[in-house]
Image 1 (tube, helix red, strand yellow):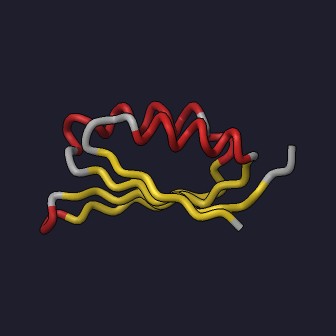
Image 2 (cartoon, rainbow, N blue to C red):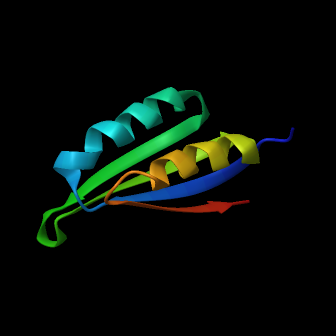
Length: 80
């Protein structure tokens, strides 16, 4: 299956409850992550993680699907 490049935005509204679960999943899929940037947006009580990834659409779907099931987490992706 062909690998594609993409950007994934992860928005965490409940950092205390969700951060560990998000990091566990990102560690599992670490081999597809090319780059990662995490920013706390304290004024909005929001944490934002942006990922640059290279993976198959199946891998991307599996990772984003698992992340999206975590309470307080929203995930958006864009592939090229």
